[in-house]
Image 1: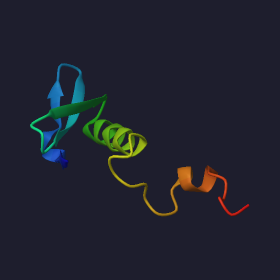
Image 2: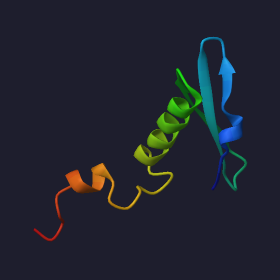
Image 3: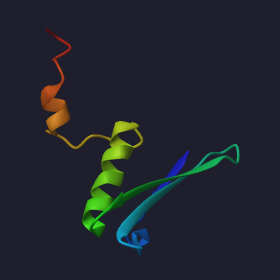
Amino acid sequence: MELYINSTWTKRCGDAYVAQAAAFSENGNHATIYATGITADEADTKLMSALRELKLIPQPEGSQLEKRLPDAAT
């Protein structure tokens, strides 16, 4: 699967900004994911958070989510 994310795809639509990512599979399937926000930065942040939640992109090192997860060794 190939995932395409580009902040220049974030566009104003009415009173909101829309950020998008597109995924393409080797089988010819594709999906587009959208996130909206009051600002372009908010839309981009929501999109990246959604992609992390779906495990399409990795969590940043030392993120709040990593800090909340229990240690597997304990």
